Image 1 (cartoon, rainbow, N blue to C red):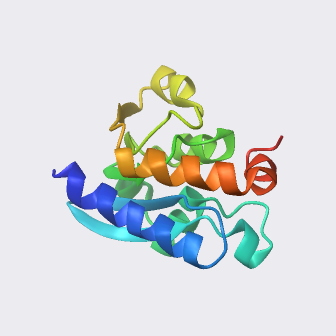
Image 2 (cartoon, rainbow, N blue to C red; image 1 turned 90 degrees about the vertical axis):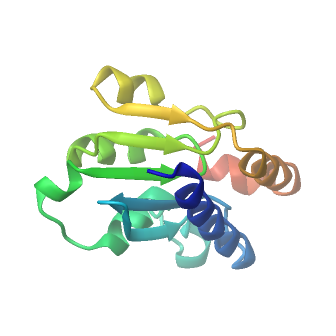
Length: 147
């Protein structure tokens, strides 16, 4: 599986979110080397308390059988928070590829402790995009992470 192709798709989702006035976090869900769901953080755009990038990608994938989730890889531009990690565990997604965890360290240890394979790419574009956003909109960022 080529991680570069799918993390680039997640980054494109993050850029869409930023262009819409939201928080630049994107995600794609891949099954059998095909994207079945894509999304980006829409908390601002939709006035939502739950539409983080991963949650939006899952929502856009639609209802799937448990067997499908158990064969998926979730790509996200940023380390997943508690809510998104809980959802990953709930649906049994076995592998998560994270663009970066320098600007925010989510629940990677929880995921690993429950058998999820976690890979950190330390992607420069992901890091730079989040650093710029955090510097430009610290209040919105703090709201998103519950601070």
